[in-house]
Amino acid sequence: MFTVSELTGLLRASIEEQFSDIWLEGELSNLRAPGSGHVYCTLKDKASQIRAVLFRSSAVRLRFALQEGLQVIVRGRLTVYEPRGEYQIVLDTVEPKGVGALQLAVEQLKTRLAAEGVFDQERKRPLPVFPRTVGVVTSLTGAAIRDILAVLRRRWPTLHILIAPVQVQGEAAGRQIAEALTDLNDWGSVDVIIVGRGGGSLEDLWSFNEEIVVRAIAASRVPVVSAVGHETDVTLADFVADLRAPTPSAAAEAVVPVLAEVVERLRELTVRAGQVMLRHCAFERQRLEGGIGGLTDVRFRLQESAQRTDDLVDRLRELIQRLLTGGHTRVHEAQRDLSGLNPILTIKQGLATVPQFSKRLEGQMGVRLAQHRHRTHAMLAQLNTLSPLAILGRGYSILHTVPAGQIVRHASDVEVGQELDAQLSRGRLSCTVTRACDNSTV
Image (cartoon, rainbow, N blue to C red; front, side, top):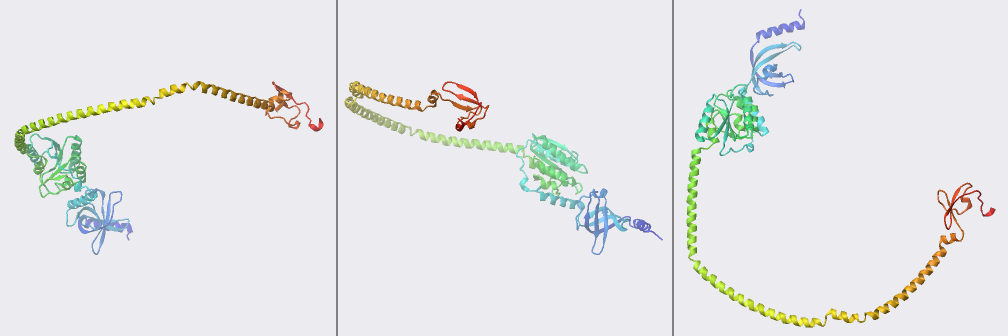
């Protein structure tokens, strides 16, 4: 008799021995990736299903992302998960059916970056027409660097070339390419950057499909030319770069023009400009010579105009003289008329009557002053009769309570022993009440 654990252990040993290395084809479902990094899923076909697990050590090597419904071909070993008594397959490798893992990874990353707008045409910039410094990101040992340098030196011998050597294949290649792009941007004097390598398989070109490289090209402030592989090779770097060149040599040709051709073009333009200037000078000389012939007529017309000017000046002088003579006559007549209306003479005549008016005015003012003086004395006498001070002068006083200062009108307003202040006609007295009585007890 076996226990459950013993039976499960025997089954596990038997299954692992017979199915230690198997290949399966199926559809992924029930994907689950917890924080541990392990991936759990189910492989199924039309009739059956089996649980599968991809441990973290194998999951990190995947080039593409696992998706629900993806048809895959897997390799692994069959085992039994004893706590649940379920058999499952422990996966070592996973490949998408019908398409390579690398190609699927490229398509997945391309779709995600395109949704972010990384490949939008609007963000691409034109290349400088006459760059002074060109940066090159590639391997020093490949044919690409030799082709690029040969073309650049042939087309523009005075060009400054700044090379950032990197690995273009292998695990560290993507990181090195991204760092080189950042360093050339930080250099400050680079006008355009060429990044690329020679041709190869998808695995060889994989570093130019890595997300870190694509984002480094997108973040570059300097225009970037992608020159990866041959004309038929296409990577994500080609989609994000400002210009995609089919080969490294074509990239160098796109970056700089031919110095000799530029010099020849300048020489042609100089010759054409000289010819245009000569034709323009000849035309202006003809215009000048034609104008000299008409100078005689101009001189005659100027003399005639000068004579007419002199005649007009003489007529104007005569007219002004007549106007001045008539004006003097009218001024003399106005002076005679105004002399009779001279205000000074009128004032002198009026001054003779001033003494008579002054005497009359003094008499009237004396009468008025006497009347006002009499009325003032009468009002002062009346005010003196009504003044409280006049009453006090007849022997009366005004009592005030201390310290309130209220006037005492009745004996009931004070108490025995209370201090009072008596205001006299001249001076004041401090008093103390010794007895108080009203009119009925007086």
